[in-house]
Length: 248
Image (cartoon, rainbow, N blue to C red; front, side, top):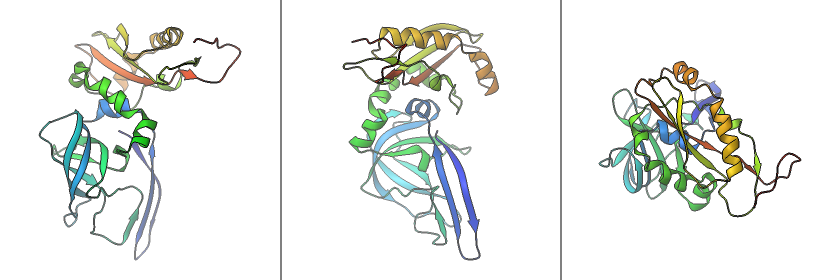
């Protein structure tokens, strides 16, 4: 789930101003931590109940990637036609007739919620920029991913892989599944995308250096029955550097 950072909060007698920004995270990380993932049309938007921060929207599911197939509504963080004295960039209003890629999360009461940092306009330009749909198509077919709990934070491998210079038609992202045994030791590394062989070697070497046991222990994630993790990487570059060989 994209983390919400509070930047500014000013409280006057007559109104409240709150400014926020979402901390970037990958589509894969959001898929792993979400309880519900779908592209959906908003068919109806309701006002907040008195005293409630969340408002309800009804959904018509276009394509679902994760979660209960019977879901037809979700609660959205923000104010919908209730409090005119609150001005905030921490919320979003999903209006009827719009279409969104939605990542939903169950709260402590089991209700499905989402918010500004967990939705994307489902327009081709935005989804293409995110590589969202092809990534989600791959992830939804990894059934074992649905059996584990995942930390909200990425491993850090995502930002430390060496770059490989390539040309031609090759995806600029890489999805890698990492199977761990009951001691959090790597038992298998599987590349889920079609990747350059040199890039794969470099990425595999980087992954093998990572201490998954320490990472999972830190976030209190159980691996007693083994664990499957998937990371989304961007290991390619179009810039020529002295130590990067050209692969066509």
